[in-house]
Amino acid sequence: MSDLAVVLSPAVPAVALGASGFWLLQARYRWAGMLLLATAIGVLSSVAARLAGADVAAQSLMTGSLLLPGSLAVLAYPRPSIRHAVEFCLWVVVAGAGVIATVLALDAALSEALITIAAVTGIALVAHGWWVLETGEERDREAILWLGLAALVAGLLVTMLGLQFGVRGLAVGAIPAATVGPAMVVGVRRPDVTDVRSLVVSVVVLAVVALTYFAVFTAVGATFEPLGADDPSPVAYAFVGLALAAGFHPLRVVLRGVVDELLFGERPDPLVAATAVVDRVGDDPVLALRAIREALLLPYASLSTDGTELASSGTAVTETRRLPLRLGDDTMGEIVVGLRPGELTLSSDDVQVLRIVGPLLAQTLRTRALALDLQASRATAISAIEEERRRLRRDLHDGLGPTLSGIAHTATAARNSIASDPDTADELLGRLRSDAATAVGEIRRLVYDMRPPALDELGLVAALRQQLQTVRTPAGQPVRVLVEADDLPPLPASVEVAAYRIATEAVTNSARHSRTQTVWLELRCDGDRLVVTVRDEGSSAGAWVPGVGLSSMRERASEVAGTIDIAADGHGSQVRALLPLA
Image (cartoon, rainbow, N blue to C red; front, side, top):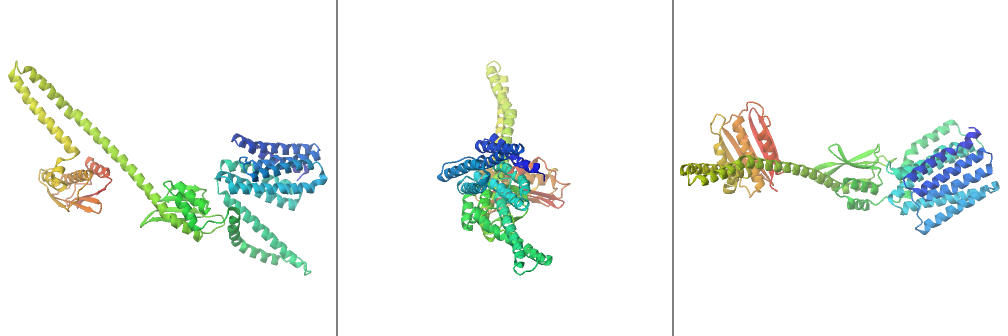
């Protein structure tokens, strides 16, 4: 790498910081945005001063930019706060250290003091991040984690490159350092794009494992020096590498639990976690899934039923586990949870929590399904009611309306001619009586269509026996209807009407289509349902084609939240309706 490239390398993170600061300003994170812009301007000015040969001024600008506005930008991210004594002290320490470092940078002999000041500033910034994680709001904590993740990765890479390649390594390290600004933008714009906690833990674990392995290799080489031996042979290094490779995954799993607890606290007790989830499980499955993820620190969770995802929370991961959600003997669906990075399965405590909250989630799914069924049933009922109103309006307007109007006109004509033409008046009165009788018959028909009077006078079973005595085949032959009925309890009026209409329509269809002389009608109660069964042993001329009669029976059943099953073949037909009594 040329000297010019080394000089220009700080411009890469400076441009990234400037663009990120500009976006933060547009998103109304003014303090962090302005300080990032100031940092970018200072770093670019330092690069320009070094190109101009003013090395001392360049060093002062670089140090001051990074330790003053750069550090203050971290304190102000995502929003500044000086409400607590700890926050006030951190602002004073960082601001003071930045001012002092800017002045001391003018003297090259004070480089050791600058290192100390930079270390103090770094410790203060880490303390600030820890403070936000402990006391901040959820979105502020997620933003700080994104910033900490980028800073951790960049710091590790810059340190390793610097130790290995010196100044040129530090120049290459400017590329990962350019991710700090974009990470700050992600932290306030899309903090939930992935599970940042798992990423932080994974990076820390990987760094610890890498340092451990470097130490082991170094120790292996160092053990040969006191013995006066040469460096270990490739075979010895191969065996060491094999042993380390075998222990890589177990060490990651163990360290992950330790680091997870150190960074984010001890994993909650299963009973405590289950209690926290139970308190937040309600009608919204998304909130329940979020509560599960927060209690168990899982990256992803979702609910599904019949292979269809109903709700999800978090970011989907490759490794997942599925647990069925049972309610009694019924399986209402399943919960899918994502495993944390580095884990092969759920811990027994996690499974215990999910088993405790599983019935509540199953109840949530059942409630959701019942609500959807109720909504569909209401829509069907409302549609049926509107259709019935439309029919009544049409019948009243087109049938009874003209008849009553004719009666009124006939009465007026009879009154006008009763003195001058008694014969005409007598004829008009006769017509008036006939029209009145027609109107009464029309009214009776309308009343019968709404609720047959025989149901109130005789009851359901007797009314059906009376009505079905007149059923005949298309050839005019009478059909024998055998009615079998249990001792039925008092039935809701809507169920009585539905059973009456379905039974009469089904018997009429059998007489019309099945070429039979006998039809069996059975009415019985099965728990909280009325079962209406109509069957015959006749042979149909062909398959039944759904028409007005079949549609009417289905609508009658759905109006009372019931179901109906209709079957016909060459050996007979059967209609079976299940009508809830409550």
